[in-house]
Length: 431
Image (cartoon, rainbow, N blue to C red; front, side, top):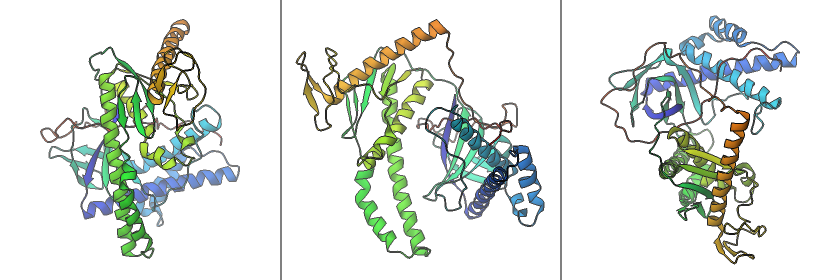
């Protein structure tokens, strides 16, 4: 499976200027190609192919005085920006036609130099891992990297990211093998909440750390200081950076805590079942800040990919399953209950239930039933498992790359991973 490994990068002043220019060139190529396709669609012209856009807006544009500075950026970064735009259009067309599952995907939008996140993506031909622990990037130079853990294999692509807190990261995509954990007998259902982050079907309760709530007092003070600064001034820029760094600390603490808790759950259980929560719908209520502070979607995603990596089973039950209304002892449906009711007594059998623990037990039972039905259906119909999506990169037989500088990277740290998307250019299609 493909995993993404993130490392902190510390460029010097000249490298920061070169990275800023690379970010700008990739952004201009994205905007130019997007503008060309929008104008062609407006004028009723055929859909421009990636080859045509690459020839006219990259290769030929470098020969013009207006875009001659595109030659200062890595050529691979410009091509990858065009491929990312092609992938965005492909996802939009598939979503509009109903071929893509999940929420509707809108059309690609223009990028701005004021966006909080700037990035440039490179394939293996444009970067190289060196023995001294640095990463050489074409047109940028040797970047100093803080290796918190070794790379398990040679990376296929590299993304240099600058976040809103003015921090730089190197994100490597690596084809890592599966590492199954020893099999255990326990299975668990999880009920996610706000007052208590998670309640397991075995009675374990994980309290919510509420990182954003704990940092609110300091954030309010920083926001007041920012509001008093004149926009465009140096003091306004410094105050904005302080607010961004504080938000980044909150996000880092939450992510680290999610990794630790999800690893514990996956390590101790052979199968994990959760409810498919409508996070976006709940985020439109008065509980929006608490919902986003909990970070349920990130936690569930970590459970899913870690289960696949370590040979565990992960399952989601339907969001309309009445886990809080059904007695886990006798199966009697006792009706909906307001959130203020944390304990209730079954009217049929008289069992006293903790609301969240009862929901976790029902989640476990529903997940087991869905898994059994899915296995029976697959055996009857011969259903095949969908192939994983891959991120575009250099082929394995391309330019060799070393899997991390030896002797300089201690192991034992957590892995940060995102599911990569397929970025191969599609055939021309009508818009």
